[in-house]
Length: 176
Image 1: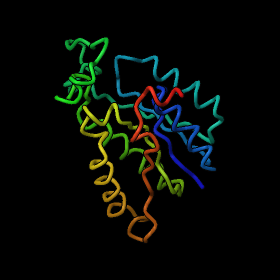
Image 2 (image 1 turned 60 degrees about the vertical axis):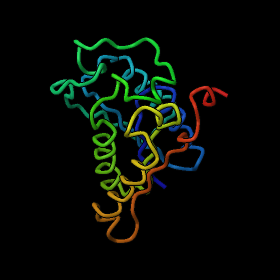
Image 3 (image 1 turned 90 degrees about the vertical axis):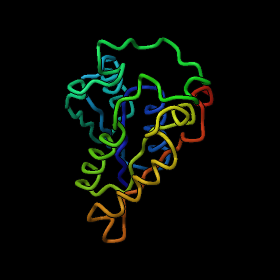
Image 4 (image 1 turned 180 degrees about the horizontal axis):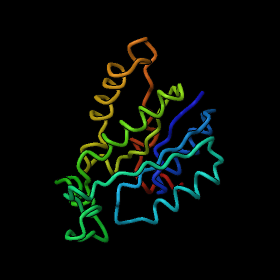
């Protein structure tokens, strides 16, 4: 079975690539060059894709820095070194990029449908869940409904499934 994996090059997405492979999937990775300030993630994504021997690795380019609104895309906003968990639970952090996962999942959905994939894997987890609105279970469930209603595969009764194998884990649990 084919799966598209959102691959940033970080710990979460790297873990998810290997989970998809362990699940018996043919892995097709998709990464995004959205003019983010931390460009080394793209280099890491390429290295992970090569090491995991994914079938194909797409890098989609677009420019979210045009709108700013995040410490990850706007040079005028400082990137915090550490985010206390209690702060993440109380407010959406300055590292939130407006609609980023919606955009990423939309690209992944188009890619998945074009290759007849059955799954999309995304590495959202409990740490992200607390602060980012587009990493929460209710958001993923809503996007699953979009996948069912907004695609040919979905309307024909075989919607592409979103897999979130890390959603109930914290980053400290990923390294164990």
